[in-house]
Length: 101
Image (tube, rainbow, N blue to C red; front, side):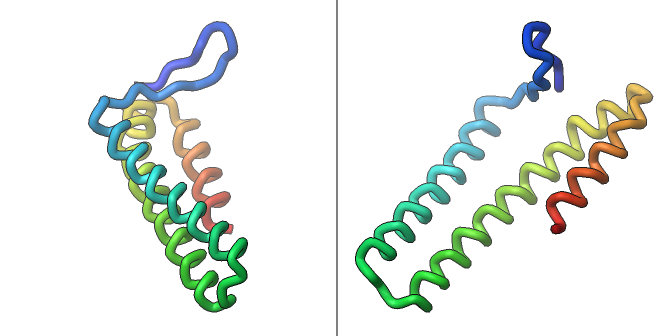
């Protein structure tokens, strides 16, 4: 369920503890990959080796986006459409356009 903070007008999404835990675990792994890439650069490792690790981190971020997007469509977008908020479709299209750049 999404709602707006009355003080700042920022939208929030309530997530289960399990969902949040899974998302944070994925992000922690990605964060570790990025730290590893940084160390590779600091240690002057060979460019192709770094590029392969960058590709792996990019793939992990893309995978995170797919999971998050699927959850967004199943919950937020579906709820808004059921509630007659057709602007949710326009928002989704805008997000997809940005993701596909």
